[in-house]
Length: 127
Image 1 (cartoon, rainbow, N blue to C red):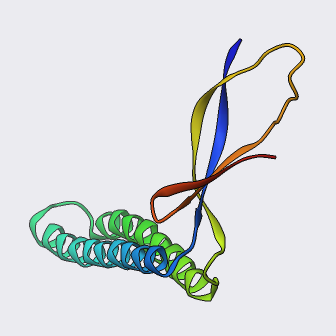
Image 2 (cartoon, rainbow, N blue to C red):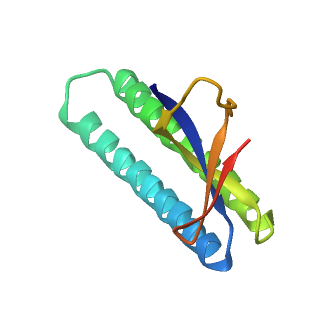
């Protein structure tokens, strides 16, 4: 019988992968900061050009900026944690679905984990 099972993918931290993650998080943070600046510009433009009450416009844009500020705070936290983590640490990257063959009499291994290092699979664990 074939079943679909969730498999955790972990990344083993190396100097190279750590730097790539720092660059990725920093880039995402910069993009969110640019979006906040763009929202401020759009808010000011709308306040001048529309007949909507300024309070409604401000509230709408403030909600959008709050979402981005939360994401920026999350990225700051991730960057700080990443700087603290020693090389060789394993961090959860994502989960994927895998088709697993099971047969009567086989030992059931409920959790499978794939470990990658610099984009190469280095371990497959059945825990």
